[in-house]
Image 1 (cartoon, rainbow, N blue to C red):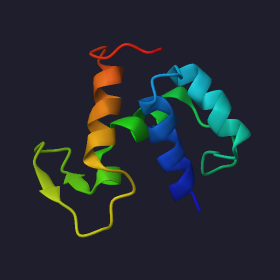
Image 2: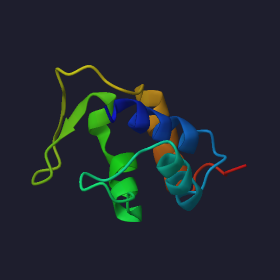
Image 3: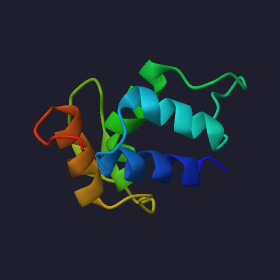
Image 4: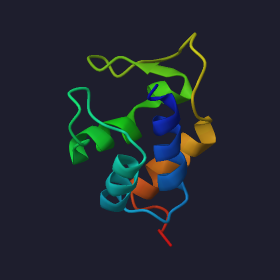
Length: 94
C-alpha cells in the first residue's frame, strides 16, 4: 500500500528538514518505488507533492477547475498548503 509512503512524503517535506533530493533518498529507504519497481524519479516526487488529490481535492487539468472529492483525504489541507509554500520558497527549510 502506497498511502503511508505518500503521507510520509508530505510529513517529512512539510517538516522543512528535507530537500526533495534528500526526501527521495529517505523514501527509497522506506520502500517507496515507482510502479515498475525502480526508484522514484525527481519528477514523480514533484508530481506527488503537487497533487491536491491527496488532501481530498480533484483538479481537472484541462480546465484548472477543482472539486471536493468524495474520497477520504490522506493528508490535511493545512499540510498540503505548507508543502506548497515550502516548494514555492515562501517558507524556509531548517
